[in-house]
Length: 86
Image 1 (cartoon, rainbow, N blue to C red):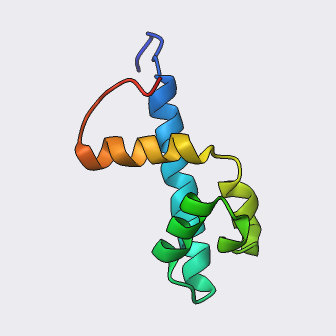
Image 2 (image 1 turned 90 degrees about the horizontal axis):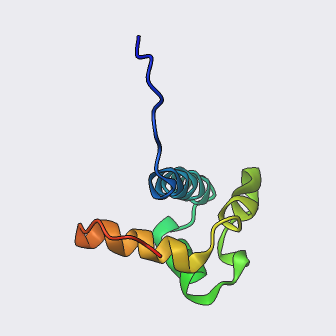
């Protein structure tokens, strides 16, 4: 057993939350018969929450994330860069 303190970066924790949230929203949209990618992109571009189903709190969940921060994380992942998001 490790006796030291484990440090978590805020960015790492935020990215994990974003990933989990997107997966939940994606799954709820899929269950409702929507094209999840198109719906999430529509939401990210427009900011209109009606792109996301209300089923199981998916709309409220994605609303907890700032869209610009989410887009930064997505780009960072896609470009495979490890830069500060500040």
